[in-house]
Image (cartoon, rainbow, N blue to C red; front, side, top):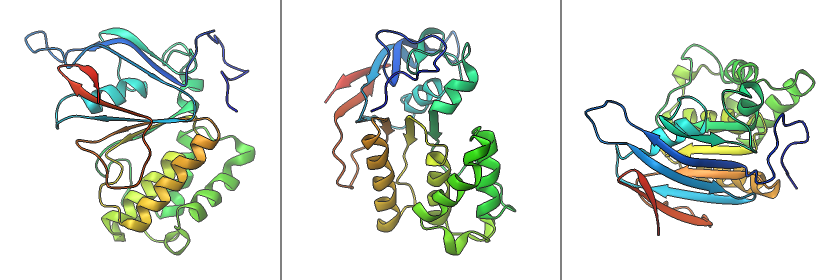
Length: 232
């Protein structure tokens, strides 16, 4: 079972895999709040789904949770750690799959892309090759390992991006419309990866405009409306 990491610099008695505490965000002073004191806590071993129409703020919420942007108010925490005060450890614990097809370099092969990502994700040197090969096998990329990204289908690219997301063995995974371009096989691989994370008491935050077609047992359902989460 995962608990607040023993090597966490400032573990909290109330630590959770992910906590968004009264998070607010406004892009311009003359615009309404995108997020308005939003509250969300993920429990170990759970998958939380957040829906809402396009442009409502789901991606902004995920980017704050990932430590990529700062909120105007409130804070994000992973196991009680702050994304700025504990930057390296925070980034090792959290993995974010953004929507679309970003994060890929067209001229890199699948293997080179995974190697590049493993370095960015600060995979331990002693696990570097092992975890790359594990990702290739786990996401059925062996036949594509030496193929350039720009010579792959959109579904194959999405499978590679999902492999990158789970490669560093994160404890919190943030998914933004992860089923985009995936076929049934790809969806099954994603579902298997999520199940494996939950078995280690990790946590998943899954965002999409509407409910998913996969047979996924979401533990919590929320809708983002007017900057806040409403239980479904």
